[in-house]
Length: 307
Ligand code: SF4
Image 1 (tube, protein in one colour):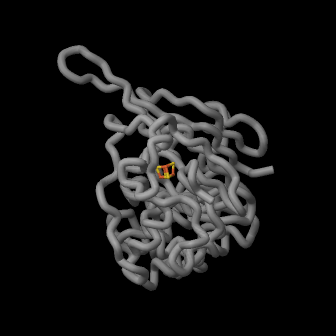
Image 2 (cartoon, rainbow, N blue to C red):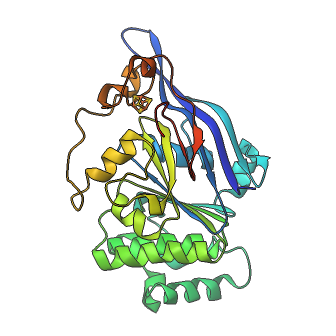
């Protein structure tokens, strides 16, 4: 059984247009993804593909005007708003995109200690700071005194001392220098190797490939493919979806061929397959309805022509 399972998740927002007219804009549609213990699932895709909203939906921190449908289950049980609030920061931890999530007025040692659930909080905080090469004087600092790398290691420390079973890291590496980034990525691998489930949300597919077990490719608010990391090789012939193949071949170390066109905006989604306007393999059948996710070889794909 997957520790976390998202099924057919759709998220829409009501928005005022001209005058008092309201319009509903679907930003995530029929998204399904599952997370296993001991595994890193990297969620990759361009900005605006819905990756961060998925994290916020799992944690129950979407804005009030979000209309959500579908199911999210944790340990086989529906993740209701009440369970989300009980598990958030304890069993399910977020490593956010912005270090602004740190309380600017609280010393960082104290912030980390407030997340500790077992044993002596001070001992746990100091042990984790040592592990992340944060000097003893750092615990008395305020967030504004930290470098970007130190702030990220503080956020990682918070997740560790909480004893979380699921860690959702939302774009945790931008702005980090290469050494700190490698260290942060190896920390995620370490969490997973200790039995944690890690969802790494990123647009940096190259870094994701160095540590992930599986890659979920997002496009325009839905998953188009979930593939084992080994499939991202050669010319992408093992991949299933035309977008995943194109994304892979667009990398500088591969063919560096840009994908023509651009991702559709949530208020201008095409009627059938969301990738159809850019897909070299599109046929008129692709415009009829959004393809369902289906199992193919060792992965899943949302494309009627994938073989
Ligand atoms: S369903 Fe059709 S348009 Fe969509 S990715 Fe597959 S071939 Fe391309």
